[in-house]
View 1 (tube, rainbow over the protein chains, first blue to last red):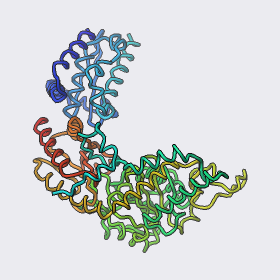
View 2 (cartoon, chains in turn red, brown):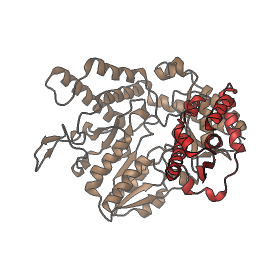
View 3 (cartoon, one colour):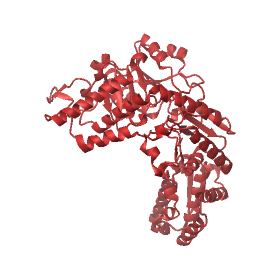
View 4 (tube, rainbow over the protein chains, first blue to last red):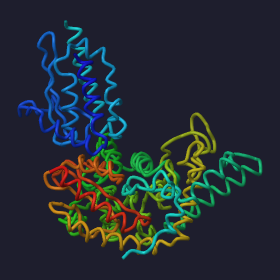
Length: 138
Length: 405
């Protein structure tokens, strides 16, 4: 399942020749993201290490993990949406086995040079940690 | 409109390189580019003159020691220090402030004393003092500011007393480019016998520094923000404080008698320069200062005044732009937000268009809190920038704003 979505994302991104269009697509993904309930926009769900505020919430409904999130910057919100599109509805095992290399494959890592400030790496770390936590509890 | 700057650019390899030909570099408050003179000085040292200093018996070592000490002389002259030994080489402004807080601070500040800082200091001129206060039991008090982000001099007079042991204040803001009225602050402080430390990290690439004229007690700056190399900086300590210092680092060349029970420290400035220093960095910094001298600080000021007024004029054409610190701007540093658009989105898309700026809290969360914002975009220019680059910046910014709407 995760592999299939990964391939779809790579194909989707290859459809946009310029980075302007890629950004437009990322921002569009962010706009389509289901709104995050205000109650979740708390310190507990805040991802550290981002220039904009990013919230990521994880729900475990055996056997799958579900992710919800938001950000106050449009591009970052798009990245949150991309991360959610990729990992939500995956099992902890699937996430653990995933090398999270899709972002390099679509050139996002390279293009968003400030991976620390956009928090992509922090988001991926949090997702992996959730997967590990629930995998151990299974 | 703007003085031709092709000849300036020729002297900066970064600006000349084919790889960077499309880049508009508006991140000079973070670091400046280096002229050939600086790069050559560093290369020349490693290629032909590499030896250690202050300890060799060979002629080569003595020659580089002489070069190193001549650099100290050159820097003393550049900032108007009366004595060469008032110049201490550090790794940068951050280390200079940590050195001062740990050396002078630990010896002279104790429980119940007050350290005065403004709430809009760069973290480098805040955290060494708050850490010192925490460890000694001293208290941090905040210098009152007026609406234009300048120290309120009449309010300052009211909070000074014999408990205040030091005032630490920036010369030029890393966010707004505003210059504080340092001479007046110092003159008021000295009436109460309070020494003043000035964080000049953003200053010497934009204005003429004269520590003697300012009558300041301590001053610091970094090499890399002054067209010099990274990893080198300066701390100026007025001669009269030499007896009130304690070594901050211990090691080679800072000691005369390395007795276990009672070591005898070397004279200033070596007492505060333990270990092999950044020799190449110091020689590079001297080359940067020689470059400024040859070019002329007045010429730099003139060019930056042109850039300042042109940028101000152009920023007025951007709808919904909120600029922070518009008045008393000295350095061409522009901090702003666009209403309802996140600063991260703007700086990211500017970068996509080869315009390099910085965004976020800019290591100055105090100023962000003061302005009640969580961050902003900062476009910081240097004298080698030009009006064509400003035009490109403005046109791309307009495009980005409509894209993000």
